Length: 115
Image 1 (tube, one colour):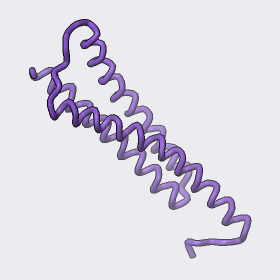
Image 2 (cartoon, rainbow, N blue to C red; image 1 turned 120 degrees about the vertical axis):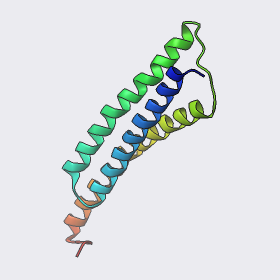
Image 3 (cartoon, one colour; image 1 turned 45 degrees about the vertical axis):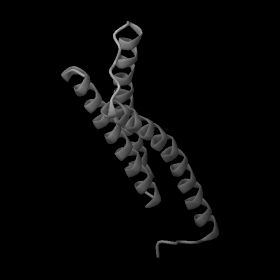
């Protein structure tokens, strides 16, 4: 694997990791009732995720053009990070929705679990 391939894989790891972190921060903010902040984190996660996906698409294009992308543990690790970022972002959206519903129900019942 040449330096360019390594660089692309490490960039993918970095971008996907950042996206996943922002999604987890969104879940934490929602759990604490900070829904505007959660949405901001989730938007940031999505923007970073697009950058990571673009890197993956570059590799797919390279492969489709007859220039195989070497597969080694770094490449596999990079794809794993992208998969986890994708899953975490999807689950974060669901978690935020659930926390919103839970908060609304608690308010309706006059409950305040944080006190």
